[in-house]
Length: 93
Image 1 (cartoon, rainbow, N blue to C red):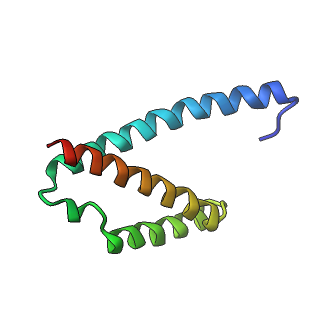
Image 2 (image 1 turned 90 degrees about the vertical axis):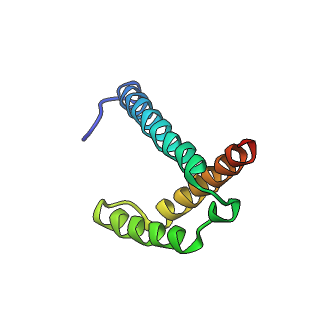
């Protein structure tokens, strides 16, 4: 894709951001459900699962022409936020 000017490009970025917010919201709704399902706070952080996710997403990044390092950093941040949310919800049960 090529764009004639920054305004045109920014409009596309804004549309993409709108879709990303919907997806992030959906993902965090799943995280909320996970907090409800789990019966022990120690099950919130699953390091083996985290590494499996990172490995899978690094491969997916390579297949989609994006830096695996960027994807890993982003997902580790998302995972940490997810753990924080799960912990907060679990603590309120």
